[in-house]
Image 1 (cartoon, rainbow, N blue to C red):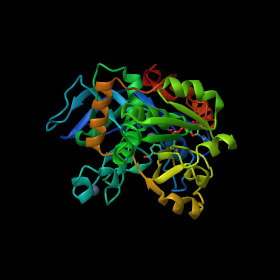
Image 2: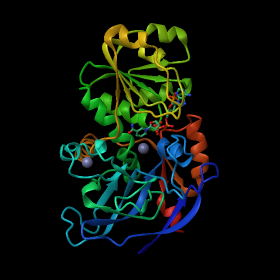
Image 3: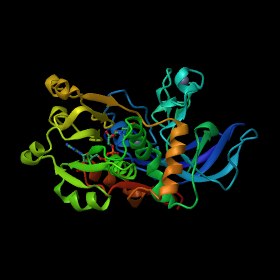
Image 4: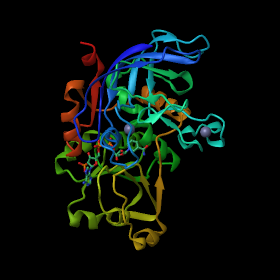
Amino acid sequence: MIPTKAYAAYNKSTPLSPFDFSRRNPGAHDVQIEILYCGVCHSDIHQARDEWGGGSIYPMVPGHEIVGRVIAVGAHVKNFKAGDIAGVGVMIDSCRVCKNCQNDLEQYCVEGMTGTYNTYERDGKTIAQGGYSTQIVTDEKYVLKISPKLDLKAVAPLLCAGITTYSPLRYVNVGKGTKVGVMGLGGLGHMGVKFAVAFGAEVTVISTSASKEADAKKLGAHNFLLSNDEEQMKKYGGYFDVILNTVAAKHEYSRFLNLLNLNGTMIIVGLPSEDPQVKLFSLLTNRRSLLGSIIGGIKETQEMLDFCAEHNIVADIELIPIQQINEAYERMIKGDVHYRFVIDINSLRN
Ligand code: NAP
Ligand code: ZN
Ligand code: ZN
């Protein structure tokens, strides 16, 4: 077994603190990765605090935006060798045989995908533990190739925030001239802006934070809509073709549905702990749609990473030592993140 240092949530209410555990030795198809960086996703907070009500599994090592260096591979591993830079995202396994797995949509595996943490691995007994840790051992089918040319600490957030926004924007064919609104300028939101701009869309950031306007423009957004301002909200009534909703907290969905044009779609990727009420008139007017989306399949995640390498797209990050993780959580809850915290995993090794 491989001794591994980590930070874990021991229950839903106390701060994360140090935790030592063991990873399995790499099996024939496994890749052993020495983790260098791990992004901090709002889903880490939701799960550490059991905010989705599923009954979280403790001790929990969160983290599913993992970038590191391969240090060993199993005998049958074909695509990785020691020294490669590799990534692990939100999913470490799935059934591999259902129609969705066969169609590169493992995130919609009919048996349920196996998450990177807060679940059991497919043996039914090993607790999957995430990337706030020094090592991870994962089947190569669920490991991504990362170009060593990019700034690795800024690549880590692509593994969740990147693919979660890239996939649905592609699915609804965002392209030249599409009017896209991105709700919530946090980790997911700022990647959504970068991708929508790269795909040629006209992009508006829809935010509750007036202080983020200048950053929104720097990220490439063309417009900024302060959603607390009713006058501005009125001005954008019926305007957008697509709204990417990344908001992590309770809000009134109908107010934002009213911003959609005929046949407009609101993509829901944000997962607040409380389910919303939707006014049906806001949906039926203009024949609007709500579309949910979860991360992306492994093939599409690799495509997204390659797209980012080609177009020089990475996240805007604040690098922190693991010892600052609890403070980072509090800042994210206040919307005070610019625009992704990334943990320097070396801070666990000292
Ligand atoms: P984040 O970095 O904390 O950003 C969320 C943003 O939402 C904030 O920066 C803020 O932006 C806005 N916001 C916060 N409180 C708000 C409120 N009360 N009303 C309106 N807006 C508010 O979070 P994230 O990591 O991007 O994650 C966002 C959500 O997506 C989370 O719920 C997460 O669990 C979910 N998620 C889903 C998937 C998926 O596969 N579907 C994957 C990853 C994450 P402004 O200051 O600009 O308003
Ligand atoms: Zn995530
Ligand atoms: Zn499956």
